[in-house]
Image 1 (cartoon, one colour):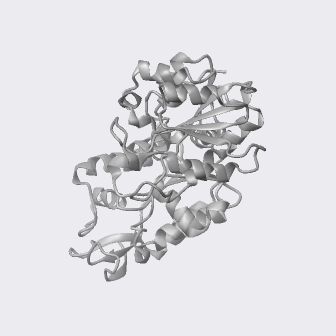
Image 2 (tube, rainbow, N blue to C red; image 1 turned 90 degrees about the vertical axis):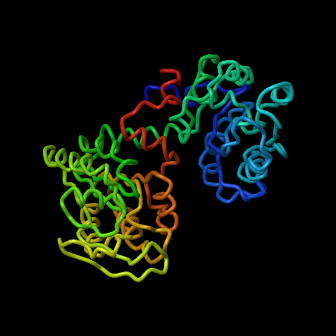
Length: 404
């Protein structure tokens, strides 16, 4: 990696500010963490710093408080979970403190009182408008809390905010944490030096959300498998009647251009060959399998890929040596229409000879629900960030880090 890593830094007795992604779902009262995945994913970076006797300061955003304190969006509940996850790392009891603000006198005093091997979590960065505005004055206050800065929040790396980009102008060294390093290594290899054949599976509702990713992959992948609602805009572009299925009429020409580019580049571009049709968008809708190249019944909509498509996709996935999956194959939130997504999850997990990467909130949720998460090489924590990375865009939070 061309950027400094936390492994390159001398952390002993240093105040190390680590930008983490603790933007976790909370209960309505803001007291209970509903999913601690993002906290657990960054624990190795925190442990690494603590074992080297750093004075660890953690900062993160949570939700969209719009520049002012919102009690239900406080990071306070994260402290107890962090204490549990870090229990046994060091001898000190209660080695995770909490600051009720992320800058100002209280934060400065609490940071000054930190001992080597202790951790302090700062309150929600977005309680200050300067965070999202990337205000230099706010960034400078954050920088004053540390000797070195580490960004481990890949999920926020596509945003040029004070804690991801602005702060780097006021510290001597800015480095990637272990999670950030892993994300960049796996996604970077898939984009730039994939083991071949390279198969990308792209799903989700809208072509407009993924067309830039598809366009980028058309120059790199050997095969692209398309599922989810977006498949029906592509089928419409091929002249198929798709009934009441979700389509973006204004993206038909964009879809047609992608199909043409795939043909020119010799990339297999596989669309569903059979479908699970329903009479309405409902978990209890009556459904049927529809195969063949004819038009769908005018009163039916596709909510999942069919069994023949599952088999077709599974065959391609089994022959791959790099697999990238972003987006579900159907309305997987409804059990009756989750079969295609689960079949793809199973196929990706069963290919133990390939490097397998899963990204995007829905795909990550699906792989966890399927029970195959432990068989995936890398599960990305960054939704928007991983999409922009796959589109080939520079991520401000990565670009700002110190070069090696």
